[in-house]
Length: 236
Image (cartoon, rainbow, N blue to C red; front, side, top):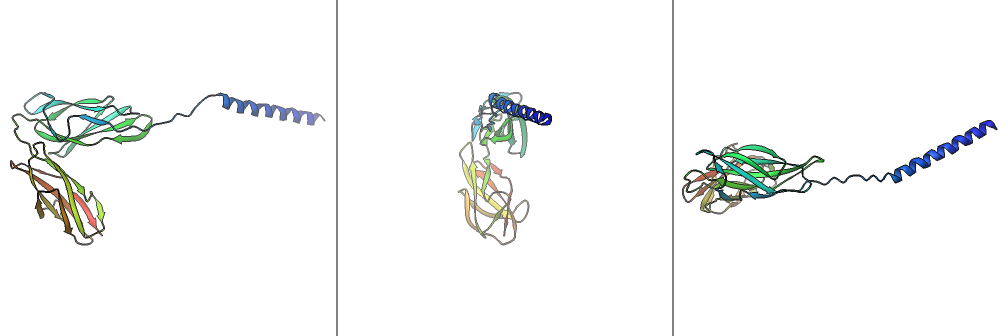
């Protein structure tokens, strides 16, 4: 009998502990935090596809320029990427606000974009990419921006042996004359496959099981030129 009474007391005690534990969880009032991903920054300045005459000249060859964008939601920091389109080199600048001052070479074309980041998640968001020319000393006319190759995309597989080559050209002076298109199986293509005033070549014939490389040279009415990056694709 004594053992039975002890077992009953233990059962009552365990039941009380379980009820107390469950009640404590309900009354805690704690809520799981909802982590929201950063949003894309909206670029403001320098303007897209324009000559940039702002900034502060610190010498005949360099200027300090403020990059501005609108604040992104759910964001704790930003990384600004600025690419020198002549040298094909990229610099990164970290920021906690929506502006960064950068020293750049004058008379050079650049592209730039901003990545929004949060200290609560590894997810990030990338803005659009804009281009501009930083005004140079006494510059009257600028070379075209290097063309952006759009089709086929870089390092892709092409399933047809007839392809449309497409790109986007731009120039702050709006005086693009024509494009020379180079394509062959060399890593730096030298075979000109066409000259056109439009930003595409349609139905170019390919061979199977080849790796092709292509680029576009843009000419303006003042004799200035620019060369795109080299893209590659594979035929099956």
